[in-house]
Length: 307
Image 1 (tube, rainbow, N blue to C red):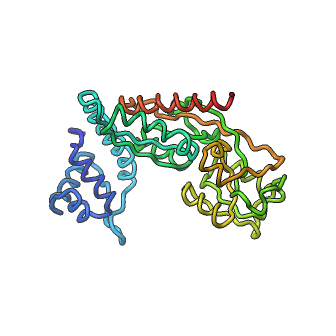
Image 2 (spheres, rainbow, N blue to C red):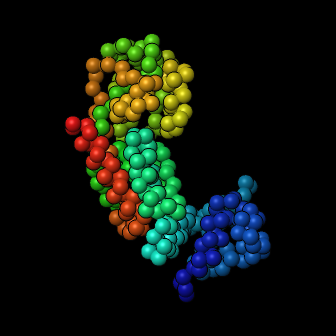
Image 3 (cartoon, helix red, strand yellow):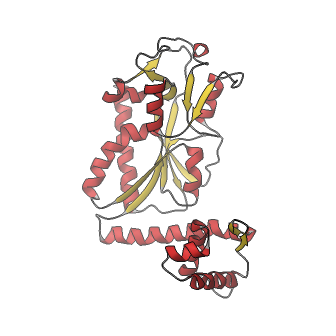
């Protein structure tokens, strides 16, 4: 290779993939269509490989293009992080950070943490993506997320990450107060109920499904899957769905007035919440500060549980 691709090469390639065509990429980058085409050809000449071809439904990546895409996104992300980190050093009130977390952290941890973060970084741009490990791990791997907090599955390889245990939480079946099945004492009595369960291909929630349906789901079982807390809340309150959730949610005032735990005799395994971030990526000052605040808030929850 005579020289490395330029940043404008990578930006053009990324825009074509994101927008699906050279024409749309040119519009998004405020450039001409011939200019974007020329930039793409320069990139392909530099790499001595064809990265994309025209298909019946638009641009299609070649095998070389798919390999280059993953590396290219990581390079751009790290460069953006480096620029942002310098800005944070020079202007401590600024910064950007993106992270993923599961529902418990959204309800009990995030509000208090954000109040303190806003005092130190009043102009920070913080993005939160709610979901499970199996759904958010790909974004963590390619650098779209700085870190993740949630239940870590032993079935999913996390060898390239640093994993730091934060807290353990008991789980149970949660319903609206006054639900017809609210006084049931076994899962067998609940199997024909309507269930709202997280979308998870592996890990904690997939094991819980085995407890609910030991012989597999049948046509009589109503299961709706999603990772939206707002949708789940409405389904439980208005359509009598049941959920498996951290019982700590019932410690929150407004939640305890609306929901209750069904006293089934079966014990669900506790959920071990951990912090996960890439070993080969340096965290920005804002990300480090946010993680430290999350550690502090999680330790408070542990102390409250013990007391």
